[in-house]
Image (cartoon, rainbow, N blue to C red; front, side, top):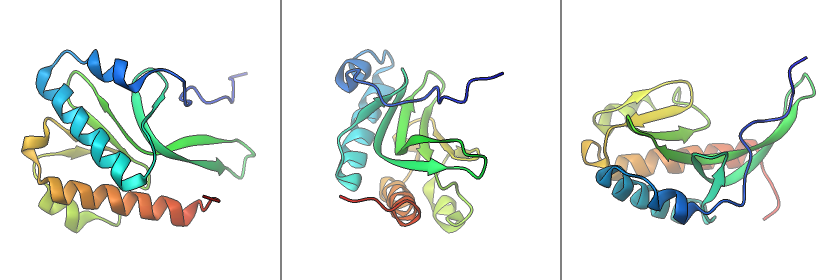
Length: 143
C-alpha cells in the first residue's frame, strides 16, 4: 500500500544556500526577486519545502478521504528549464491577468516563466496576491 505521507514538506534547509547554489545567473537573480516579492506579499519568511521548492506561508487541508496535510500557500522553484511558480488556487479565475502577463505557460497549479524579463512584474505580483487572498479565504488560520 502506498504511503499517505506527503513527500513535499517544510524543512529546516537553508533557503539562502539553495538559492546561492542556482547555477544559471539569470535564474538566480530572478529567484531573489521572487523571494522578496513573495515574502513581502505574504508577510512570511521563505521556507524550503522538499529539496527544491521555496514556499511562503502554508495551509492545512483535509480531503473527504481523510487524508490531510500541510502545503505551501505560494512558492517557486528555479528549475533548469524555467521558473516554476506554485499558484495553489490555479488559474480559472484569473484569465484576464494571464492575458496581460506576457510569455508563460500554465499547468494545474504551476505558472512557468523562462525569465522575469519576459513578463510584466506588476501583473505577476497581482496574480500572486490574488492567490494568497484566495488561499487565506479558503483556509483561514489564527495569525
